[in-house]
Length: 266
Image 1: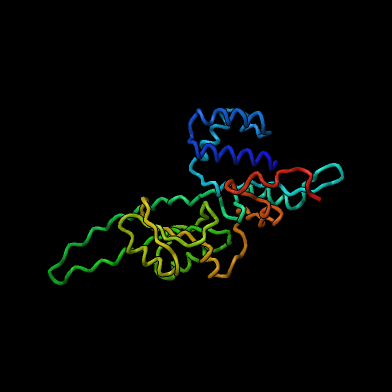
Image 2 (image 1 turned 135 degrees about the vertical axis):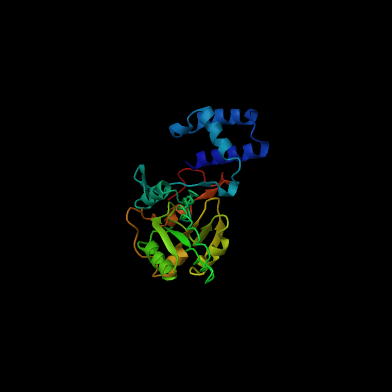
């Protein structure tokens, strides 16, 4: 496995240095399909070339090669459990080696609720000046960007107590939000700043969607009782990877050909 990693690393490094041209990729991909045992998704020259092209904008240091933890068992090699199970769980959950979310997903900007119809002003009378219209309520949607159960409801109550109108409380698509974000549409910056005053440390972000949304992050959870419990239906984050996995991981810019001899271990 480590020799195959060395081959893949050398191929990617060569491609990056010589350029992503078919004349460069074709012989390398042809050699790879004859030299590697790969999944069906990479078992042809065309598929391997497509894979190499998809890596053109990725830095070599960010390409990590991982070997499942193993040990000798008489004449066989056994995978080490539960370490290897935690590796599979992290891969299935799209987690990086340091436990971060690798999907890059962000919650979709919520659709703005329909604005209430304007009420016609009453014509002025001769005996008194027209009444001054009350300021329109600031409408806010709340999204829980964490796995903490009840966090959105807590934020919603705080907004209502501050005289904001909460249009809804929902779970965000991404539950790995670190910092609370106040998202606002055109003409809503001043109102968004008023909302942000309730969420110290929150960042303001303009969006193409109308309205104002609060996407709660881990900072708000920490300030309101800590980690709490996972929201219903939210998958728990996998446990951190063991050192038997992380310490053996290598980057494509390392000396990838080192430590590829089989049978030297005890």
